[in-house]
Amino acid sequence: MNPLVYGLLLAIGWSLILWSAATPNATARRRARRFEDALAEAGLADVQPYRFVLVCLGSLSVTWLLVLGFSSSTVIASFLALIAAMAPWAIVKYRQRKRRDELRAVWPDAIDHLSSGIRAGLSLPEALAQLAVTGPTALQPAFQQFADDYRVSGRFEESLDRLKQLLADPVGDRVVESLRIAREVGGQDLGRLLRSLSGFLRDDLRTRGELESRQSWTVNAARLAVAAPWVLLLLLSLRPEAVTAYDSGAGMAVLAIGAAVSFVAYRLMMRLGRLPVEARVLR
Image: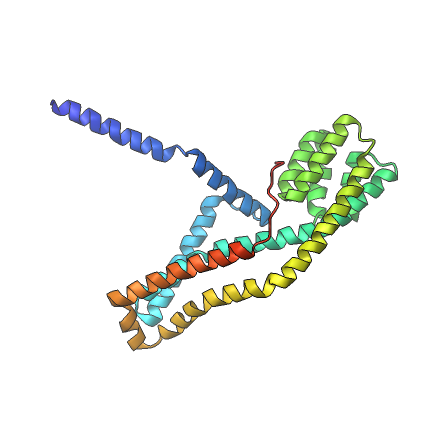
């Protein structure tokens, strides 16, 4: 076959490979969307994904250099650096859970304030803007931004969309869409809807609080059980004989198996003890 044909086929093959790598598929887009949602729900919507990846890489590099400096073990430094690289994501998940719990606890009061404002004769935009002053502290910045947006543009729909993005919360999505529908169809039953929603959220909060208090010791025990061996490894890295043992092929295999078992056991324990989390279906 002509060498030019070989070259052409090779160029087409490489072009297809690069095109497939550069074009994200549906799975990659869903993962990227979940990643961006996690950052937004953690209150880090302004953090770009590539910056977060750089933070993870920085954590990996610094940990690798520090552990290598006082242990002189490449194997130990590599395993501990991989764990340190996952620390920023663990912090994001912690902030996400904490913020979600905080908002879940204050939404009933916010809905009560909104219902009171509507009963007092305020229009729906005015009642929402009033939450920037009378609402719960955790929600005031978002409603202040809504008030500013509506004051500047006068467009209720667009201001609601911006509010939903700022809240980045499943309950907030439900409240915003309820208000949008009430605005479109007239809203004679808006007060009744808000009271029903407030009662439902309080019941859910009480039930979830009881379940979380009962399972908290299980979750904490799982985290301690996973962290303890690696803390012990960090302490053992100060002993030359331990460093020599783990720098061997058998030592590397032990660490690899331990890391795999720790990861699988932790994920299994957290999945078994995880309470249902409401998804953001009304984006």
